[in-house]
Image 1 (tube, rainbow, N blue to C red):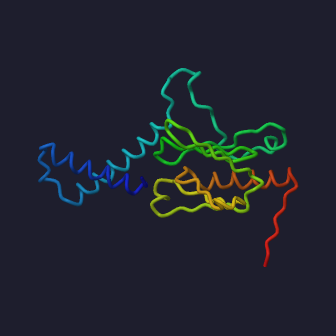
Image 2 (spheres, rainbow, N blue to C red; image 1 turned 120 degrees about the vertical axis):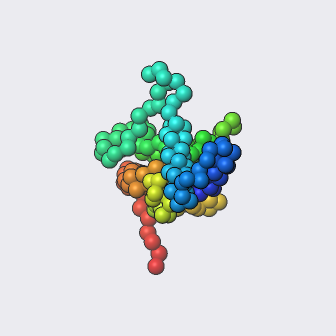
Image 3 (cartoon, rainbow, N blue to C red; image 1 turned 135 degrees about the horizontal axis):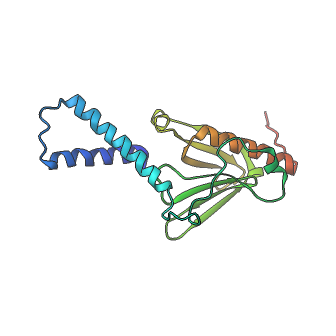
Length: 189
């Protein structure tokens, strides 16, 4: 379900709850009531997304691992072990997650059964990000990856938070992976 569909569904539920509550809203003008419902829906969606990110346990052992969210240090790329550069998931998603390491992108999907897709950074030709107006309002966007896989040349990390920052982390990781493995690409004209 898309963000707009989720927004519309929650908005319809709020209007239905208001109608079924029996509360007299005749003293509130239509414009004010509409704006109030929009605020309630936006805050509800943001809070649901925030709650999805929280671990179910409160112990230190169950806490989620901290992820690098700023500029990636050069030393990370120079060691021989695979380091996590960024982890995230689509906005309001429970069944899909993304991990960017200094060697690959891992996409895990599924709730009960898991499916994992790995994309080696050296096989990526191009990376871009896209944000619609509504995406900009909630600070999410899509990272578009063009790779060498003939069966699936384009891969999208959809509805990620702070897409420009994730794009920069991925772009730098791709450049370092190419340099480390001696890969270059030529564009034909």
